[in-house]
Length: 532
Image (cartoon, rainbow, N blue to C red):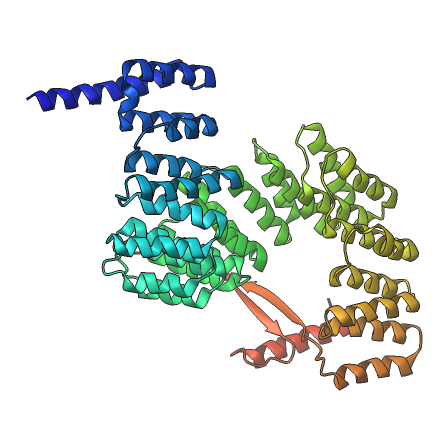
């Protein structure tokens, strides 16, 4: 009876203390006063109350104070250690991660009685610092204490190995698990997706029992395909998911719309948009941003603008996406006007915004404005230009015919070595403006950086042809053959009834290839007769 009264008293004391923290706030002064009250009343001897206090301090952003309370606690138990490690694992700072490792090592000298929550928290730290060797030590300890079949621990181990790039050990942990729930399956699916091992991911999804697969399982694979540049497969998996009556969530729709954007599949993208509206799903900013991107990449910039104007809460990504879309469609003036709207709206541009804006300047040939914006990056917005921004400036100068200035920009102004994209931009500009000397210098650099890129050789060969230097043009093509560089085949795609078909020059594998060729011949004849 006395024990029950004591338990109730402790429980009510904890509830009162937590309620008190919520009522009186969690600024540092109040927290210090609460800590003094704990010491005076003896509540600091209760590890559960101390753990709640440490958690409150951490959640309020006073991690150092939380850590000082923890370190001054005599003989902290497992729960208190777990709370401290978890709090440190949630902070994205190297100092917090090193402290978490220190707490974990101290844990073994003070109590050495881990539970199922100890290892998942510390495995998150291993992921944060990308230390697979530390992760292996934790794995060994889970085996010693018999937690290697705990769902929480196994999920943490798979996530740790996957995040550190060791998918073989992640799969080994998965295969050795006797009873798997959906979180274990999804952890490995996410690992394969993150590393781009999509054949393995698809094979695992097929192995997964139908009764276990959920929306997260499908989304891992769809998102993985989309991020790996395999948009067609992403759409196929998405359509199969719908056929199996699994309702997509926002993350799924974002991945599917991203794949539609990469494919230029406007019809399917609009169907997904209709699905969102029909289901009455919350149109989050991220979803609206993806829709704008999808419309723009699929060629319907008018629809992209309509979607943009309908968004009430716009973030920097929203503005950047529409500016990029306008610039890509050659609407440089409109893109720059949109940038001015963004600045007036009080939204600070980021580095991606400036890539879009500088590209827009390039499209309309506004060299002086481009230079001014490039300077404002560092001076006004504190953004250090990267190699892509320098590439945009070189493209801007090259298109405007300022080839010597563009080359000097590469040699004198850039704080890092020029990459293939930079020299490729100069080669393309030299081809447009018939500057043979610059073209030859650019190709010499490109041969060192990407010797097997046929496009570079072809650009210079075309430049020779345009200048009437046929012998040099033939020599360039012979050189390509001599060193084994093959010209890349042309590729195009078309969407028919929600399916995107790809066609490669010289490929006769399509089942209706003969009929396609007949129609193309008819179109060609009509063009020659001026009927189209």
